[in-house]
Length: 408
Image 1 (cartoon, rainbow, N blue to C red):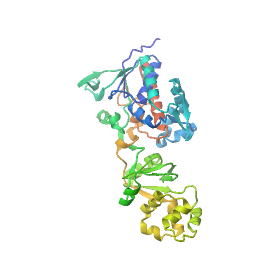
Image 2: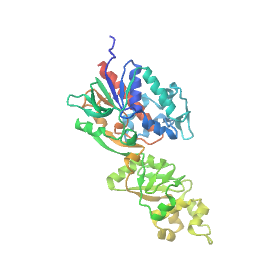
Image 3: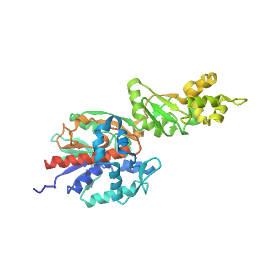
């Protein structure tokens, strides 16, 4: 039997999840309409690509899946259905060849997001996808129609199926501000609080440390919180700490702060040396060198790293430490983190719609014909390509669910 594919299909949100869903649907002959509150789509995608668009990661698939931590089991089937290799092939199908960087991360050869986005939009338009921009979704009216604010007026749309792909609550100036939460909660959908992820955290620096070291990077250190650790660069800010290593640990740090008010970050300032090796070097004759110069000379410890020791233990305590105690502190320099940086400074957000609210097709149980994908869902991942991969995978999964619903 020939299927009727002239359905009214609404996709709200023109980020990667919404766009890949539109592509899957249009590949099958459907003609969805994408609504976006901004004057152009993919703004966060384009912003993320300014420093080099990290599409995905090249590590083996089982290791890749573990990066989703508490949601690894839930997302594993989707990632295996649309793998990092599939994402690379998709990108190259748009004329954008990819390469693997030294860290294992995957980038387009152009390194930017804009050529990829232009090619993608051109292909979607050629396949019959319609874009309605400057349409701000405002929930549903009493009859169940979608409400949009557009050009100073309120319009209604009554589609057969709807995909919500509005993102989380980070980078609100680019369109993702979490305003959708209120609309869904009014309809009985359970939404976990949106919180900053891949973000920095506040530290009560002393005035002298803040003045001398804000804006400086701390390299070649291993950071740990609870059962997770990461070796990457850290950046000292005026009121705290951020950078790749901190982003990788942000879920554990945030959990600790939520549970007890603060979190303890442990820094191994010389991960290439054991405590014994550090102690041996510290025991070399000091002669007329100050303690800081002695440590820098024999351990190649930067001024920033040495001053972190004083922030952790205090100036007087450092002076009175034995070589054994100082070696241990260098391997386990602890900092107290007090709160996340504001969510509008975060790279991504955690929280969102509980997976228990969805059926196997990613349709909301409380709202017949309404599907969800992307960062609106309650999952998070570190930077490194994992965020985009899951947005693509959930978008494609939701599109498949929409087809199942329409066919049924």
